[in-house]
Amino acid sequence: MQVESFYTALIAALLLGMVNALIRPLLVLLTLPATVVTLGLFVFVINALLFWFVASFVKGFAVAGFWSAFLGAIVYGVVSWTASALVFGPPRVVVVRNVRHDNDIG
Image 1 (cartoon, rainbow, N blue to C red):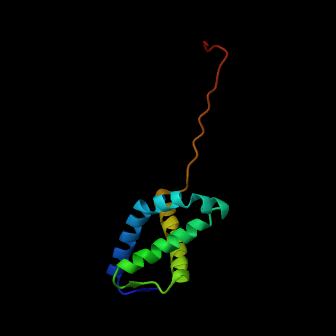
Image 2 (cartoon, rainbow, N blue to C red):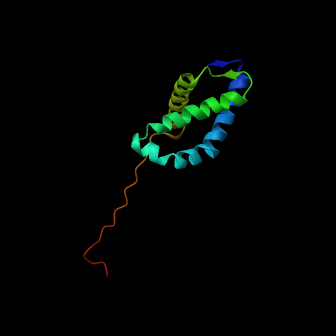
């Protein structure tokens, strides 16, 4: 994988974010049987193909092949997950209990 400049990386990240928001959900839905059979691992293949796809459009951002795209998509996913955890904090679970008292009507 090769990135010429910070500006190129920024453009690639922006385009990858748009592709992940617009095209990825459709691809995940269309390949749902393969994803279920592989216990979700096919999503990594989808991410790699989209990573490779974006590299074909952005000048100065090159991916050598599928396995480079696969590794790049994994690194991108880990960095994205970490940044999200740092910005939004740990997930919160809210438990709502309905406590009924003896003096309640009904």
